Length: 368
Image 1 (cartoon, rainbow, N blue to C red):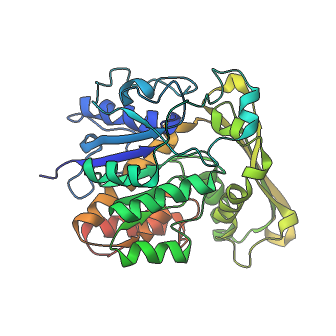
Image 2 (cartoon, one colour):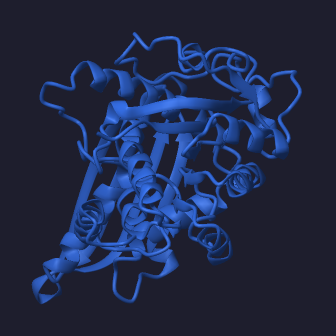
């Protein structure tokens, strides 16, 4: 019988809220049909085996609160599908701000944006100490897009504490050979970078692009326009924070096209913030190509999803695979689960192949 997966979280936003709600939602339903779960059993670990043991945030409405309360505090606005999250006995600590707060965020109503807490920030040694004392297995990095320094701050803390790092954000750490080597040398399994939702814009776009390829259709032009109403989209109004995000989302699609596609014929990235959408995300995707006889064709679709539960579906598998790797004494980037659940993994595989490799990893037939 597998034990608990002890999880720390940096950034108690909508994605954290959905993940934590999911632990208790599926715990109630563990003896029924677990619809919505990508993989029910990973090395004996079920979704309800996750236990939150530490958390950091920088918002005044979350710092000092029990995690069970903080996940429902503003500006979180995701769907509440499990309101009965018990008191976890884990207080949200004041994180290190660094570049985690974009200046333009202060210009918006408090219920829509971050409100910086006036508390003493945890330094690196504080985070390392908490990770060790809480006996965390993994830390999930949910800091905002563009928080390059903050993401590396928590990655360094994991290195020093011997804790696995799961990078849900588009700061290139697990896919950076230098960082990957540091974790591998210390025998710490890591997963990243930039979470790929269960059925989100990236996986749909990749699947359609693969369909063109498999059926002999030349993909000539494509775009993906995304907008939503949560703080992620508000944060991304600062275009200077989007460099790695655009690279991550674009390469997730173009990496499966032999020979690639010229920059002028592909546009993938965030578009705008529409407050009333809250945690809903809408994506418009278009692919143009030529089929038999060089006759033109196009596919155009609209995807409308609740963004954060979509992300949590993938994260539930990433966390448990990281724990399984720890149990097996495996260190460094986990290539299979990273390719399956992340947009910018160290190695890109077609999604069907990534799924096959994850299944082999779970059975112990593949090391990473």
